[in-house]
Image (spheres, rainbow, N blue to C red):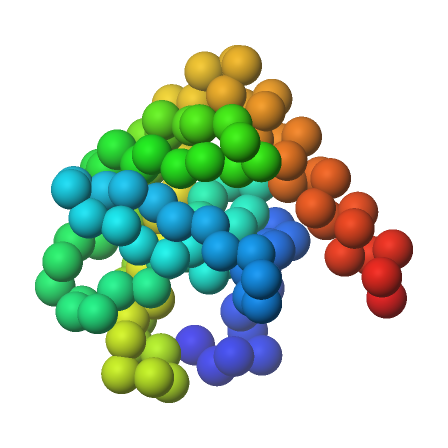
Length: 116
């Protein structure tokens, strides 16, 4: 499919600069490069660390709030820096975690649009 045919279903926060968020998965730490209301994107050094369809437990901290989340790998693709991008869809969120995650996301999204 051409890039023109790809339409994102959700806004994603691009995490760059001073804001570094990491996810602990399987005894390793990965940098989160983007964050959406339904998932996260992480950077991998190797494309074979996870498999598409694999379910994972993620632990991340946002604004001092610790989240233990479940996710499923939806894509792994090479990026321009000899690394791989891995998209993880969040699944089975309990209501409290979903609300906290959504609040964090909406607050940071609002900050981005205020600065434009």
